Image (cartoon, rainbow, N blue to C red; front, side, top):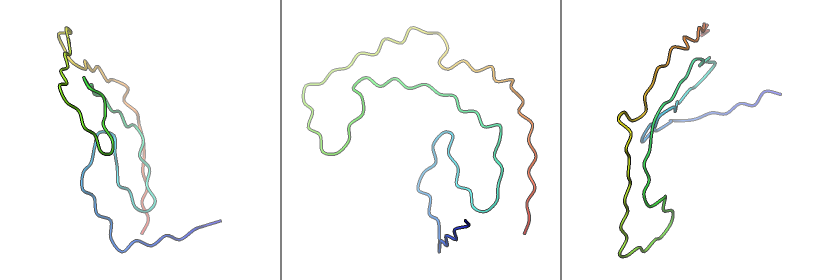
Length: 81
């Protein structure tokens, strides 16, 4: 069953790693996302009140997020109007 969805506009405020805004017929293969985060105090959501907080992150590695991405993913994409 086909469903029609009509948008007057699509507004994007920010894009993050491995994100997309796609409209219409599309084929998106071969995506890779690599990253590293050091979160010392975690994530806060909503209203928060934190006092006297001290965080130590000991990150002894030489290279952050070493990437050797040789996966070469072939793809083809056909678009019609």
